[in-house]
Image 1 (cartoon, helix red, strand yellow):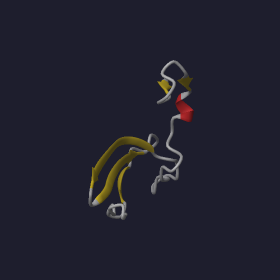
Image 2 (cartoon, helix red, strand yellow; image 1 turned 135 degrees about the horizontal axis):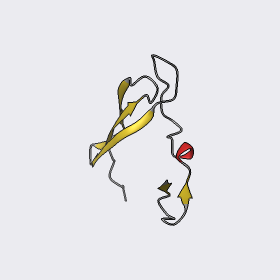
Image 3 (cartoon, rainbow, N blue to C red; image 1 turned 45 degrees about the horizontal axis):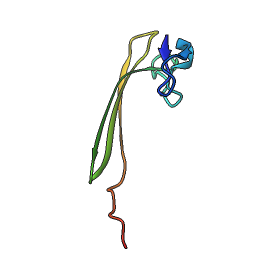
Image 4 (tube, rainbow, N blue to C red; image 1 turned 180 degrees about the vertical axis):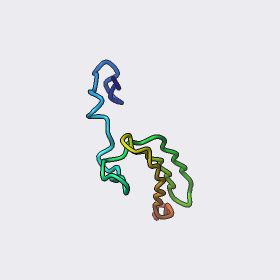
Length: 75
């Protein structure tokens, strides 16, 4: 079982570790599981690439998310 970020000793059931925002599989309609998350932080913003796979049929999908450029704090 996976543990939570703040509570290493607290066990989380596998069915609760699924990402809530994961897409549904375009082939069979089941919610996909996260395989990998790669996040890149910079002054130009945040870029996140998430790889998903369907546990039922094996379909894979990659989604990319981006945030706006970080603006300096004005005084």
